[in-house]
Length: 294
Image (cartoon, rainbow, N blue to C red; front, side, top):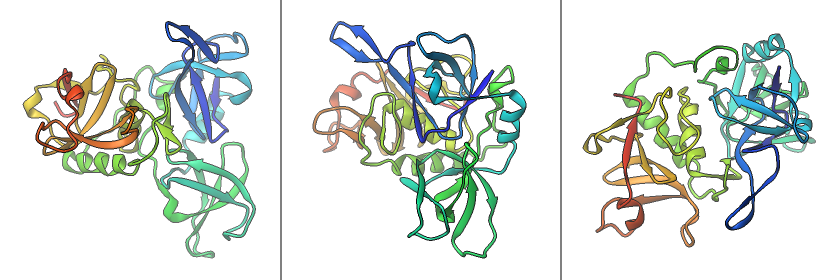
């Protein structure tokens, strides 16, 4: 079985419960988020009202059954093969008519997937779209970007790989994508403009360029990121710390989502001890650099 996220943002849990016990007490078990229009493979049977799922980027977890639209493989393929695009604005209102005064049908974050059904210029600047639940509405065309990644990994044996990547363009594009989240608050398990965590930031920025990497702050076999020597790092490569990940910009600077008190959210820090934004704790714990170009 397969599923499609209809809500703007759906929580994906580590276990089939909303919370878990820890040495610090009861904590949330949220580990990821599913965005509108993204599909999943349902990998088992319902447990406590949760369904086990695998995302198109090969991350596993549990979703509340009522928050997932169950559909056939053929229906999922039909959706994936339609004219899909991504929301690129901080948030985007879906309007009932091509007017700002129209009724808001929904509000979607950056990264949500919609189907474009009419790009005509009858209403200059507006595009007619269809949501994953079949509702049609309008958004400004400036809110949309091309969907570069594939969800075929949901029904194929391996993650789809983007061919013919222009290295220079890719490196620049992931940095631009990351800076669009600058100032967004830190949210454990988050990956939207409402709130985002460290690996949510890096994985989404790579996904926007058509490359699916591991969702957590680890270099995992079978994913495109490979370890490279520290002195070979270039812009867009990833920096790995214990339980944390950042994206290297250049000149010793990196961008990341951090929960540090006084510096919460997506910020820029430095590996250079003479820089005002130096993070000694991270600079001294950096243990790996990862790149898709190796």
